[in-house]
Length: 80
Image 1 (cartoon, one colour):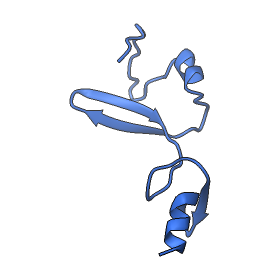
Image 2: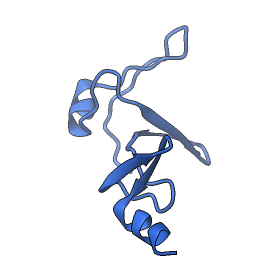
Image 3: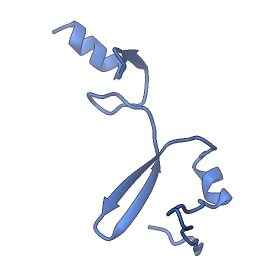
């Protein structure tokens, strides 16, 4: 894990600002969704990416009944 040397304070509502340099590096823009993970004593933020509900792929997604499924998984379902 790389230390950026940047420190931010939480505001009274528990919010923290992600510095513009980091937002630019990860292509995070206003209204993007951020996933929050906990790993031991660490809090991890990750830009949310739409993914297949079966295998987790982020490529060739199609929405079926409000669920995203990739092309490979759709073929497996069709052939079973």
